[in-house]
Image (tube, rainbow, N blue to C red; front, side, top):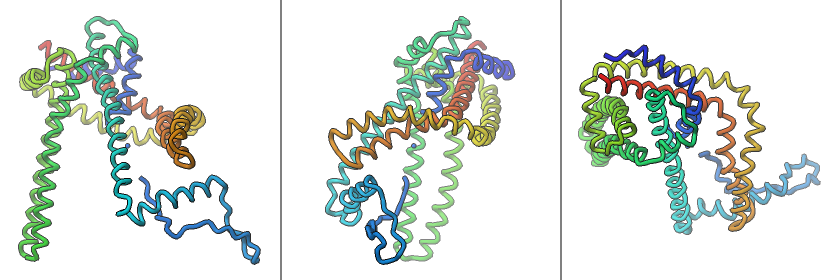
Length: 353
C-alpha cells in the first residue's frame, strides 16, 4: 500500500515551493473545465417629441444609441421578421460561429494539454533531481507529442459519453412515436419504459465515467512520463491500476473528499474576494482596452458603425473577466496543481512498488 499521508504532504510542499507551476495551473484553471435574450423590439422606436404639447419630454437618446437602434432595425430585426428571406445570412452566421468555436477549442486544447503535460513532467523531474526549471523549460516539457497523445486518450475516453447521449436520443425518439400513435396504453407504457431505461442508463453512465476518470490518471501519466504510445498507455495504465486498485480507489476517495471541501471553500471564497474584484476593475479596463482597440481597428476595415463597436466589446470581455477574477482563478489553479501532483506522486509510488 502507498503512504497516502506522505503523498498529500509532499504534493502540498511542491505546490508552495515550486512557484513556476502556478503559471501552468492558472492556464489549466481557465482551460480545463463559455446569451442573453431580449425583446424583439419590432414596435420600438425613439419618440423625438420635444414635449411641446405640455407633457413631460420623452427620453432623448444620444447619437450613438440612435445609430445603434437604426442599425439594429435595419440589419437584425428583418432576420426575425422575415427569416425565409435570409437563409443565406443564417448559414453564414452559423458557419462563422462554428469557425469561432473551432478556433477557440483548438487554442484552449493546446494550452490545456501542454500545461497538463508540463505540470506532470515538472513534478516528476523535481522528485528525481530536485531541480526547478523556469517557464520556458517547463513549456518545452509540455510542447511535444506526449500532449497530443493525452488529447487522444481523452477523446477515446469521451466516446462512452457520446454513446450515452445517442442512446438517450434514441429513447426520446421511441417515446415520441409511442405518443403520436394515439394509443394511450402504448403511450403510457412507452413513457414508463423510457423513464426506467433513462434512470438505468444515467446510473451506469455515472459509474462508468467515474471509473474512466480514475483510470485516466494512469493512462495520461504513462503517456506523459514514459513517452508511450496511445495503445501502450492504455495497456500499461490498466496494468498499474489492476495491480494497485485498492490504493488507487482509496486515493480517489481521499481526493473526492478534498474536492468536495474545495468546492464548498470555493463558494465561500468567491464572496470573500469581492473587494479584490472591485480593486481589479480599473486594471481590467486598461488591459481589455488593448485587444478591444485592435479588434475595433480590424473590424472597421470591413464594417463601420455599431458592428465594429460590438465586436470590440465582445473581444474586450474575455481579458476583462480574466483580470477581474484572477484571484479566484489562481486559487483554482493551485487546486489543479495539487491534484495533478498528488496523482503524479501516486503513480511514482506505485511504479516503485
